Amino acid sequence: MAEELKPAIYRVHEQADQSGDQPSGIVVRTSVGPALLVPAVRQAIWSVDKNQPVARVQTIEDIVARQLSVPSQNTTLLGAFALLALLLASLGLYGCSPTR
Image 1: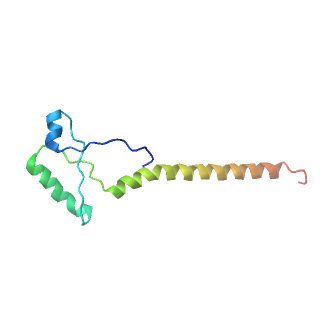
Image 2 (image 1 turned 30 degrees about the horizontal axis):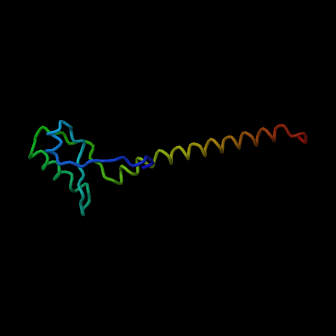
Image 3 (image 1 turned 90 degrees about the vertical axis):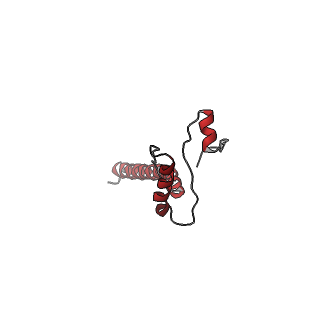
């Protein structure tokens, strides 16, 4: 999400076989829930090649959420450390006050 866009080439599976490249995945657009379509997509792939592995089935929402969660976690952690630093500084100033 935060990276600059890179050029991409979309080719038919047969074209990838001819050039020696291995296709990295497929994308399926659906109007129904993605979880309902996974078994049908697996069966369609296995009907062509039974030895073809089908792994890492993910929705676009899952991919985006995972990419956005790391910066959010970093911000939360930084905020917690800032709060701890403020608390320690406050205790240090209170402990060194001459009116005590």
